[in-house]
Every structure is written in C-alpha cells, then in structure tokens.
Image (cartoon, rainbow, N blue to C red; front, side, top):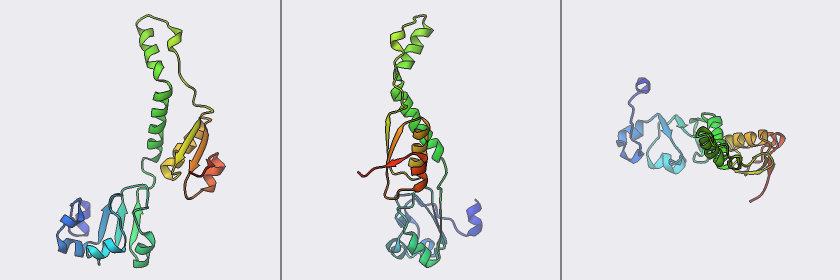
Length: 173
C-alpha cells in the first residue's frame, strides 16, 4: 500500500491493540470521532514521534487543535467530503415524509384508477426547518431549506455571518 512507503503501517482499529513499539514510532494517525486526540491520549500511548493526524470526519471537536499545533503536529480532516450528498439525503427523507401519499396515487393510476383524493401531499415551502449544528453538513442542509423557501432556524455556538446572509435565523435552545 502507499502508506507503506512512509514506514510500517499498523491497521489496528483500537490503538491499545497496536504493538507498543509501533505506537512509539508512529508518525501519523488516522482517526474517527470515537478517538479523542489530546495531550492525555498522546502521552498515554507514547506517541512521541507523531507528526500528522487525519480525521476521516467533518468535525474537529474530538481533536485538541491548539495542543497539536503547539507540538508542530499537522492536522487535516475530510471537511467537505459528501457534505452536499448528506444534506440532499435529509431532503430525500423530508420529501418522502411530506409526499408519502403520492406513491399510493401513482400505484392506483397505473392500475387504471384516477382517484384525485389520493393525490395529497404537504408543501414544504413556508414550513419551519430547525437545524441544530450549522457546520458543514448542517449549513448545507440549511442552505437547501432556504432554497426551498423554508423558514430556517439554526442553532450553533458559532453563529456564522455567511449563514445569516444566506437566510438562516439563529435561535437559542
């Protein structure tokens, strides 16, 4: 594999299962949100040679970024991967929920029955959409909601000006 060009690769999903010498000599870590990278983690696992951490997630709340920066350890994450696709999936479910009778109507039409009473759905334009966490994914979901003409209310500890300009009204929980 290409990582092998950098040195030995340990593929343990739980760092405690990796051999001690592999941890001590590790130059890079690839983690998910279940692994909190901070001073205690680095010291507890003897990661004195660590130079790079990559999180395969959007968020960074599981990473002590100032600590890594202070040690000169580089960090990256998958900030934008699949953000729009996830937001689209949210709206897929919103549409399925608001238009659930359309499948029934379509089925009856295919069987030769034209029952207009089955053509019932709910318009999402003008409805309220609450987004808790207006980061990458929540922000994209909020933007789609605004595009659909929804009243988008967001909550986040960081009230981003570009989201307010896009039409998101921030609320307190």
